[in-house]
Image (cartoon, rainbow, N blue to C red; front, side, top):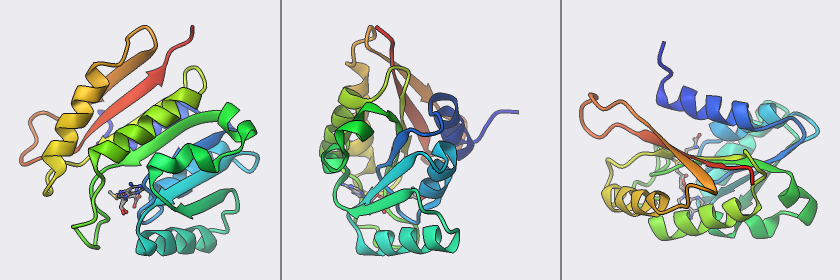
Length: 190
Ligand SMILES: C[S@@+](CC[C@H](N)C(=O)[O-])C[C@H]1O[C@@H](n2cnc3c(N)ncnc32)[C@H](O)[C@@H]1O
């Protein structure tokens, strides 16, 4: 059975990230990926979740509290600053990151991720990511501004040096409208 988009995004993280590592939820939104990541890294690991929207921060903290999850820190800041919030030790154990691009479901559709900050964030994370670590982007692009972000991100990932990174595209090409797809960037071993 082919895995759906969210299922496959989680599968990629599970394959790359080990217990005890640090991971980043770059767009915590309602917190579903934050909860997932906290389970992947276990009690000895840590999740850093970022969002620029107060509502997303509140929703994520509430979800984490309801599940008694203690290994996550939720920060109201742009993901382009993500690596500046991590200690040197955490940066050296950075196993992966996940981005869900677009807007917060059930909220202001005017607050969306933008390619400039998304790309800055990816670049920062790739600098510190462990070998064989992975950055997973779930690209929703049906909303206003989504097409531009998609185009700029595709341009950015196409030019990544294949000696340093493997870039995967995963999506269902016969789905109607503008189905989301995955871009995953794996840091190769030297
Ligand atoms: C598709 S939603 C994320 C959904 C989330 N992963 C979940 O499981 O509910 C995208 C989120 O990105 C946030 N966002 C937009 N620009 C951002 C930025 N520069 N840094 C961090 N988060 C941002 C939005 O506020 C929104 O909550």
